[in-house]
Image 1 (cartoon, rainbow, N blue to C red):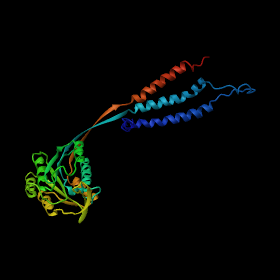
Image 2 (image 1 turned 180 degrees about the vertical axis):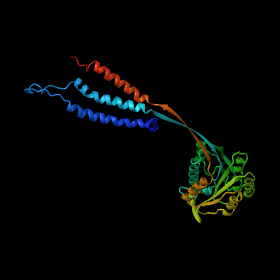
Image 3 (image 1 turned 180 degrees about the horizontal axis):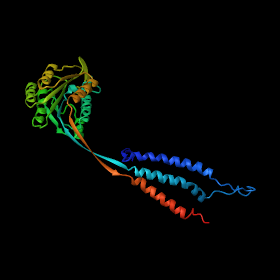
Image 4 (image 1 turned 90 degrees about the vertical axis):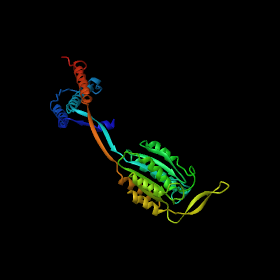
Length: 335
């Protein structure tokens, strides 16, 4: 209801100036009636003090206010209020994006709170939320790669897939080449004018049957831009590990990221390499990529109008008829 009121406009707003007549008439009636008051002399007021005003008297004194209300309603109806109904058509030239996420056990390192993997999942979902018109997919990798979600505009289901990501569902290792190749394979037949991959890892390529260099050449061939992100602090960090009895312990682990390789992949494909040493830096990286790769959106707004003068005219007519019938019935003064 409140939103509808905000969308009401008047075709003839200058007629609303006539509303100033209403308080002027009210003031004139109050001062004019006092000047025309008739005085009847009484020798004594004894016996009159118990006389009470009945409902007809109250109704009589209400009549001027009802007439002013009718006048105000007629003026509002004449100004032609109408409700603006908007309808928009969105034409978006979207970008196809593949998120490639490392899920090797080292992603459980606790230099990010609670760990690198959970922070990466949260920031990725925030990135997706800012791109409602793009098709986005997801590849996960450790010792092997797997397409967790093909490119889709159903971001709700994509977020559910991200929530299900955990370490240990693929064999151990860091197969950067396989992860990148899987993403390229998903994008190579895309008809989108812009195709990008965001590859996030915290290690060095030490597994897989496709080298990162081969995957890089595939990306260049299909004109796919690759943004690479190295995640992890410098030096030593703690990581949970299980012993042979299944008990979890924290172990100091050195952070080793092949920044030279990630920089080469990014530069050769037209992307950029970033290093995230904390959650805030990772968020800024995704924000920066979001600004670099803007989706072209054309929004056309169509307006329709609904005439709403009846909401003032009908009450005015009802009050006018009520005044007429009251004058001809309960307020009729008989000689």
